[in-house]
Image (cartoon, rainbow, N blue to C red; front, top):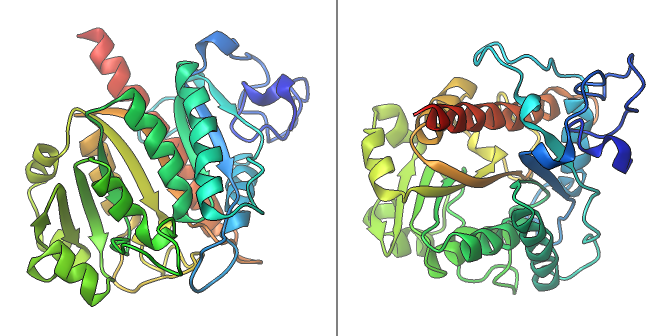
Length: 316
């Protein structure tokens, strides 16, 4: 990974002058560093995972897969990379306890935000999200959160720490962010009681929708109404059904499909200002690269949706 190519492409694995390298998003027209819109922060961490291992390898797998994507997005009919994508070196957090890891992610995220770039965090377990969230909340006090996940992540403490991946939604809600959960289909009894109405209610500043409710049909106007104008999107890949996303530490049956998730993201991003987003909990499986590629495509598609929203606003 070289600084020379970091602002040209997503994965930063190829050389600027290597026209045959699949790693370069655009070796012909380097993006000036001053015009870079996105800063990708790899956060390889998995200290509190509770079942399957491998989330620390997720960021590298996503970046590797990104080197083989088409640059042209067929849905958006555009090339999202043209807004400028800078990929930073992986954070040195693998040996840190959770609380210290959160602070390192927070510091790195705050630096990206201060530089005027939109942070894209790649996990790693879901606990890495808290550092980015805190940095965004400092910049955007009225920040709200769109949380796509199979799990409620509403535990007060798990595994002896409040910084566990199973506590991330609880932490963000307690720190004052209106939060909408989509795709939930696994929670403890205490989490259900905390959320109210069997885990589908509105408690404090949280609105939680289970996957079965989404399939029955919900009015996305309800989701939009609960979110503020500035939104942070956190995507745990286990929100997807294991049939298309088996590479997660805790896969749950009954998940959402690709187009269902894109429909949600498209609707929210077109109507809100996205302050940053993350994609977490990819645990690569040897011999099955499809989930890695899917995660990379998801990150690139979200960037494309954000570009379209910003460009539309600028034209108004």
